[in-house]
Amino acid sequence: MLDAPWAPIFIIALFALHPILGLTGVAGGVVLFSLAILNEVLTKHPLRRASLAASKTHQRAESALRNAEVIRAMGMGEGVLRLWRRESAGTNEAQRAAGTRGATILAISKFVRLLIQTLILGIGAWLVIQQEASAGAMFASSFLLGRALAPVENAIGTWKSLVAARLARRRLGELVGTNPEETRGMALPRPLGGLVAERLVFVPPGGEEPTLRGVSFELLPGEVLGVIGPSAAGKSTLARLIAGTWTPSAGKVRLDGAEISVWHDSGGSHHIGYLPQDIELFAGTVRDNIARLGEAGPSAVIEAAQLVGLHELIMRMPKGYNSEIGDAGLRLSGGQRQRIGLARAIFGHPRLVILDEPNASLDHEGEEALHQAIGRLKELGTTVVMIAHRPSVLGLADKLLLLRNGIVEAYGTRAEVIAKLNAPVAGRNAAVAMHKPVEQQPQPQIA
Image: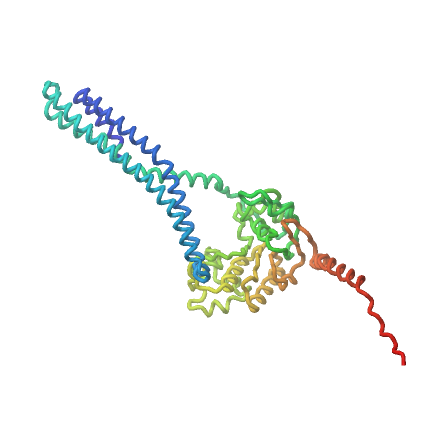
């Protein structure tokens, strides 16, 4: 790029020496430039395939590293390697095709450059014989032509890197286009915690069938909603929509009347706590993870840990709250990761907390701490939405919402929903009792 601006100057110098020398330089430049365009045409598609295949192979390797324990425990290593080799074969084939074509064009370009330099020496010698140029001009023309054509030849040699960089930039542009930069809105006052879901519909990307169909409910500040239902009913999807990590295809989630996205855009994310089903911790200290990777005073961090019964456990660690937990919390047990994730969710007294399977990895002690934390949140007026399979935490719920196939099958106070769920059972028991044959009385024996 830095040499290219000098090429026209060298060509002009060739014209100054003699017009025939200048025309020869222009012709050589046109031929090499045509080879550069041909190189682009022949290598663009193979390089694109190779780049995409390499990205997919890299993702496969990262997934295998994240799930190394499962792969080793269940003997899945050969299967992972087989898939990786199959994807790597596609990468290598595309790279080989692009490399072969690029090397061929590069070899031709070098041959053409040397041919043109030889040709211009011959033309220069002929001009010297004709006494139209000096011997110095003959050698100068060869030097100037070499300097003029060098940028084009170097561009052909590095074309593979240029194409790969251009493809990467295009993919980044597409990614940024699908996720435009968020505009920071005006800061809003601390919410009270009133939550409203208005006919939520969600269709997953690339899917056709919605996983949620017209889900609506309303919670007052400080109320606890328990979301129940069979697997694949849409419970975790609902949790993500309420937390604002996913955008509904239709409908709104409102906190104190404002859409949940407005709170995130205005810097109000600290008013919302979220414990996902798959907890992701970050490499760093216990304090960093509880404080949401921000700068926070010790009292706020300790308060959140005490609220979930984690303070004593942390103090038994080698460095207390400054103990490193490893990448993704590798040095912690599943229950410890869940409780740190719970402490992170309730850090800073949020007004809305969403808990997706908060007791999935907890022992008896951890579940008692969870009950105390939810009770304390209710006292503080925090609105809580919790997804639960275990009925032990549902006793803390003020309202229940039963999801089935993405549709609200029952919603109301805990007593109302339980009564509705028990009604069919009572009806079946009554029907069985009606059709049960009456036991015959024993007949008196004849003496």
